Image 1 (cartoon, helix red, strand yellow):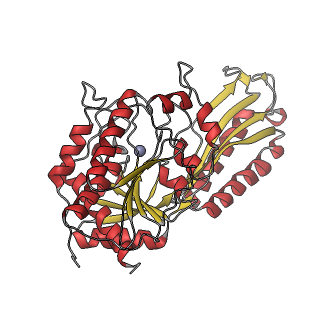
Image 2: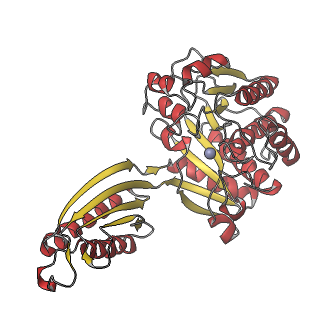
Image 3: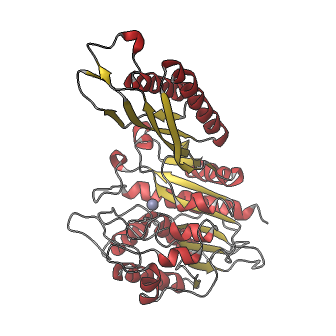
Length: 412
Ligand SMILES: [Zn+2]
């Protein structure tokens, strides 16, 4: 059995540059909206490349593509590697694309070396990760994970009123297989970090342990508008003062529960006049933490602060949680495979939690999943100037291959 498989960095880079032409922009980015003609072109290209390696390519009812390479034991569910080929309207060349083409490079390397895995190995291209043409983001991986129904996806419309279903059929990528019916035993998603940490710490690989949870709230504090000159201090119901004390309390919650973060980023003071005691204030709260239980505690503490501070000041308040995106913890055994894979290749790494959403966050609900991050210049993404170097792309694909092989060996 071969023990060292090395990906071909030039071949990977050439594929990145070749597919960047499908929707390429003058500023060097890509505009490849989901289910557009450009998306069809890159899908056709991807399918042909996988078939040339002896893979069988299937498509499910929401257009997710699966390219399977058989293993020794095809009773075992495949080991998946995947991300997305769609981009933002002014997207870069690496967001999502690196995850699919890095997987293709890993597959090509195994094929070229005649490396036989125990389980089948496959590449997945998830439909509409970006959500810029059809909101919400991560739509088809969400359908796959049972978060949305296929019908819900079909009915999404773009700005021109064209439905997801019409476009899916038009480009010929509405498959027959039920979304979610295609089983795999693990999924590894290689992705650019989209943040500044790896670059700042000069680390090549981010071993991603999860995706942080996020909760958004809206609060309205009501007191009473009153004349600043004629209303004595002891008779005031100052909504802005109440909000100020809550903002301090929210910050204290974040300080106490680091690496969690707590922010009031938007505030509207009424009537916002220099000689009126403010009678009403609206503000937002954004709480985030990698651990759902801690997030729960953070929520309790900020609500307790509302209860302690505001009624005592003769202020009333209204509070609503308007968004809840649960924290995701990736599979420890897969995280270990990534760590070993990076170690074996000799790359500096750090564990980290993703601040952004990814297909992997939904897939983690139905199968063991993890992610590998590589740096991107200045942390810049969703931008035509998005840049990940030749070496960084190669490092990511190598660690992806190493991790898949390690996981596969454990099946023997
Ligand atoms: Zn992405």
